Image (cartoon, rainbow, N blue to C red; front, side, top):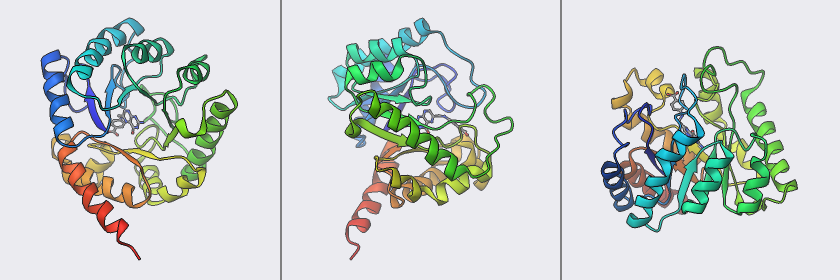
Length: 260
Ligand code: PT1
């Protein structure tokens, strides 16, 4: 899954992609580099990010969806927690919903049930603005597993079909350094839920903490994290550097398939 950010305060692209021409170019590159899904977010959810209004989010993403449809037939995922944005984006041609709030907004489950599109349910402790202040867990793996299991169950009860559900542990979302490391080390446990897993670690601060690198120098760390996630059973890797990530995952896949 290639990340196309359209927020001017986007955490690593620094607002380079608010321009439609740039968004188109970036999308074309991700397509030719081998992305399978394009993820668009109109609201930054990185640590410390402020809320964005519904109308601003729509103004940002609807034109991008139009442009993307000209460029590719790949699935378009919309990274949002707002039901109006989910609805409008799917009407405009988005085919997947990526919700860092795991459909906890009132009406979100019912809407997605009626839209019949795949949905990624992500775990977060707290909310983006303050989630990194003092995250606390008794057992981070158990907390994530329990939360995602119960959200998935609620979705299924509301009529979302089991095949439409993807789960994501939410690296960096209300997790301290040790929580992120423990989660990645035990990612296989999440497979027990029986849903495809999505993982986003691309350029995140945990990689900076491990390597001492700033955000522009985390490619190797991001690739290592993507490979570990794939070896642990992740089905979807959310990444900025599509070409490099696809190559690394092709090697990983080839070796995994050769295991006897
Ligand atoms: C993610 C994800 C996402 N990450 C899904 N959606 C972001 N499903 C946005 C840091 O610590 O992992 N899964 N949408 C980006 N969020 C962050 C969080 C960016 C933490 C950076 C950090 O640096």
